[in-house]
Structure formats: C-alpha cells, structure tokens
Length: 449
Image (cartoon, rainbow, N blue to C red; front, side, top):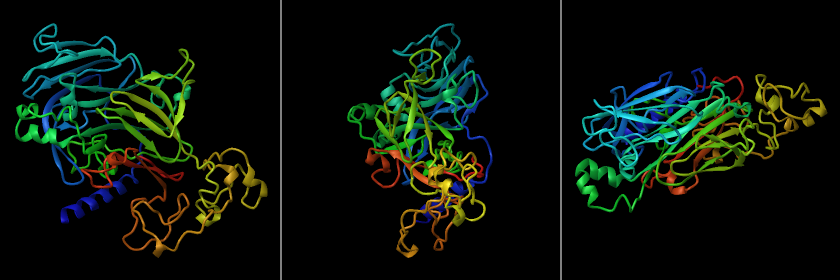
C-alpha cells in the first residue's frame, strides 16, 4: 500500500511538473543525427499494477534497452545509417517499411553473410549496418524482421519520423499539413505468459507451447506505457526503460498532429474524445488525388482504426464550437478572461452573434455571453476526479474540498483518449489503465511543453 501511495504521489508531482516548463511541443526522440548505433539487449519494464516483464529492446549508444525503441527523427533527404549490435542469443534485425533502397552490411563483410527471409540479420555477438535515404516525409515504424511474431512482442519495435523539406511545423510538403503541436501514439500490447516463459525457462519452453498462436494480451501500451504512467513526465525516474510519455496538450484553435502507429499484432480502435480528427496520410503517403494537390482525399473520423503495421497521420482541432455556452464564462471568470469577441463588448447584443472565432481566445463567437446551460450539483454531491478544476469554465479554478483535484492547475478542459476496445483500458484486468491517456485543452497564455 505504501509503495502504491508513493507512486501515486510521484505521478501527481510528475504531472504537475509538466505545467511549468516552456518549450516547443515536439515529440521526444533522437533528432539531428543521421547515424544511429543501436544494441539489441534484454531488460525489464514495469506496469502500473506492479508487474515486471522481460523485454528485448533496442538500446541507443550502449544505454539500456527501451520500450519502444528510440524514436528517430530525421529530415527528408537525409542518408541514414543504423548499426545494430546484438547481445541476444538469437539473430535479430531491423526492417524499415516504407523506405526504399535499404542496403545492409554485416560485421567485416561487404554483403549480408546471414540473410533472413525479410532482412539482413545480426548474429549473436555480431552486428549489421543498414543504410538508406529518407526520401519521403511521414510517420513510419521500424521493427525486427526476424521471427517477428516473437521479437516484436518482446519489444523490438520503434518509430521513425521523417520531417518534410518545408521543415518543422509541417507533416508533409504542403501548406494544408501545417500543425502547431504533435504527439506520437505507438500502440502495442503484450501477453505476459510469453515474457515470463522466456525469462524463467527460456525459448525452448516457449516453443513447446502454443502461446504465439493462442495469443492473449493483458497489457496495452501507448509509447511503451500503460495508464496512468502514460501521463507521467518523459524520462520519469521509476520508468528507466520506458522513457516516452503521452499526454497531448494544446490551446483552443491549434492544430494537433496525431502520429498513430499500429506497432503490435492487434487492431486498436483509438478514440479521441472532444472532436473528430482529419486523417491526412496513411503509411507515410499523403492522401492526395495528384502530386502537389495536398490532402484533398482526407476524411474525418471520431475513432482512428489502427491496423497492425500501419501508420496514420491525423489533424485534431478544438475550439468549443457548438458547445452552446461561453467556454470562458465571460465576466464570471474574473478579469484575466473577461474579453470581447471580435471586438464586440459583452453588453453589445451583436456580440453573441458575431461570426467566426475571436483571434486571441479562439472562442466561437456565436456562443459569446451564453451561460453554462445547467446548474451544477453542490460540491458535496459530486465524485471529484483529479483533473476537475472546480469550475466549468476554461482557465477558472473553483473551490474544491481538501485533497481533491490538483492534476489540472491551469483549469484546462480534459478529454479521455483511449482504446475503444474496453478491455484494453485495464492492466491485467484492473481498471482504469492500459491504452489510455488524457488530452488537456489549456487556456490561452499557458505555456505548454
């Protein structure tokens, strides 16, 4: 119990720490490099219910293995090399779906000395170097091409992001793919029976079972973490092999690029509360009818159907449009959020019907001045979640009982983002957990990291 209390306290402090750091909202990973040195090795991950699972992971520059592998962020046109050293007892490899002209050289040779079915492999104690030019912008997966049904399950999978020639702030080389913020969603699952057998009895024991065909996962992850750890800060000290968080944050009116990767073997219907998202690309290919036309074949969804091995790029926006009430509460919210809408004062009758959005607050002007449509219950009648600010208005904190709330110090609006397969919101049948996180809509003026 004490261990769980300390972890919960650490989680709250970690979440609160996210709100005080200013910086550009970019995806964590290795950027600015064209040569990568990975090592395949063993380590362990932890799960929020106290579990501990053996993994085989890609480690960067001789560090610890991590799950998923290092996110590599490169520029279109870069010539890349990935050198993979192997400390495992079985051959391993990397394949790069969506990339063209991949060549490979094993240790001390000029060609692949031990080719697998899909890829050039690094034998135990050996290494292999892959080279290719990142000719197309987009979101991609990389993973082991050796006994993929086992090695991806064990953790040998990661994300590759290729930024377009237009640079940061664009998903592809077209103005309609511009974004303000981006978040990565690497979706995976694990069957602990497989990891436990490999850890305690070895591969021979696993091969004597049908676990790889009678597959039954009980853990589900976003970026290598199960909720609530998805919402802890990146590089949290208690998750040394699971460095990547996933807690998207944005302001009203901004465009959030969702990079969704189906990195496991199961389908995952990933549901994003708050609004539809517009899918602009799949598998690193822009949904366009002709070169240069932009994503004119894009479409809106309220759930991204993530397919194993597929990547999806989608743009999510939130403005409060059509909520039917003023998200800021006008003068009720205090002087810091008392505002006009497109220059219309609160007592100007035309203010409530002004077209469009306020350029500063991004408020939907037809809702300007409208009261919250219901009377909230008294505080003592509520079951209060950690993200409740005590107020229905963006940027306004209300009174809360001692010990309640605390995870939303800027009074943002929170929306649960999760797998719509309900069992995937558990950690070994314990709810809540699994493939779940929170989106927070922060009020204008709040710095977001």
